[in-house]
Length: 179
Figure 1 (cartoon, rainbow, N blue to C red):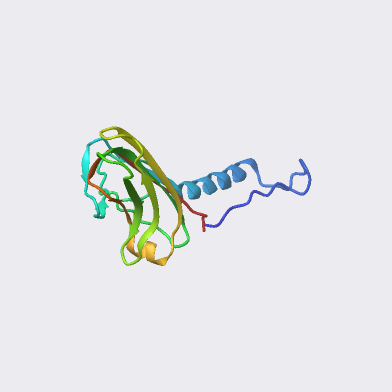
Figure 2: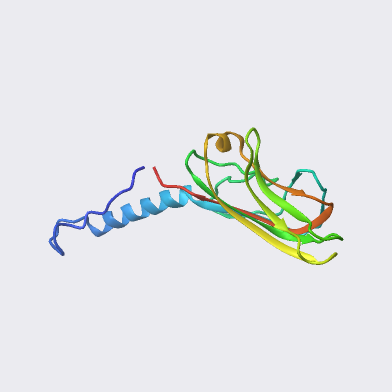
């Protein structure tokens, strides 16, 4: 359905605009379409898991989803599944690293798209001392191109040293202009 414009008449109160019932029917239809194509899904997992150095560690967050819009933006293992070409996906990923011994360590957080590699990446320096919690978050606004649409993607962590991560949270939001 295309956008339905409410005709307001030529001048105020001239009686040539849409009747009140017709106008609100159009407004409801427009909102129904908007809510049918926009939405979010998120998952949280408090468990502590290992992250192995020099390895692409796939982040699978299987917690109970919170969502609106009923859109299947991510599967039960946190694999992102874009819905339409030229959509915009906002990906938020956060957690807590348990900092390992030593200094100058880092973790690169990436959205990995098979057949394309790292779609977006951000390197997080670990600045707290050994054994301390080091919270992090990344947020990307991503256009959905043909490769991302065909393959989907998932979050990976690539650390320079073995460590652990806990309190992982992921949220995917779809922004889409109605057709």
